[in-house]
Amino acid sequence: MSLTRQDVEKVALLARLKFDEAELEKITKHMVQIVQYVDKLSELNTEDVEPMAHALDIQNALAEDESRPSLSRNEVLKNAPKHDEEYFLVPAVLGE
Image (cartoon, rainbow, N blue to C red; front, top):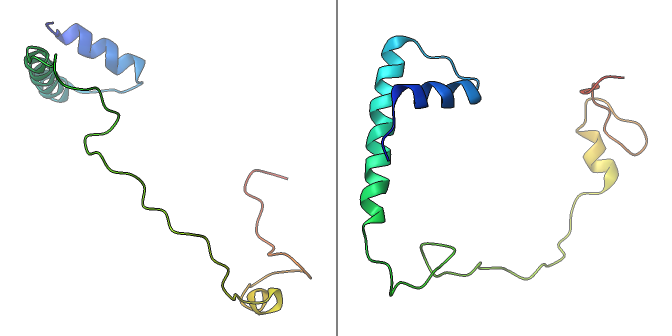
């Protein structure tokens, strides 16, 4: 597969990216190299390679949940600059 400058310009437009001439030249060269590398990988014989989801065959190392003592509500609220009886009071983020 060959990649042209017009292809890179189209991808940039779809991604809402704007490049000057120097950046566009540099990015086009890099993307051409990436596509060439992927094309080279496509030549590999993977017939006897079993499909896998991850490069390494490892499992999540999960620990059992355990209950531990924690601060009381009053102790936690003492550290808050603003609070009511039960909750932290913070400025509105999404509007009123």
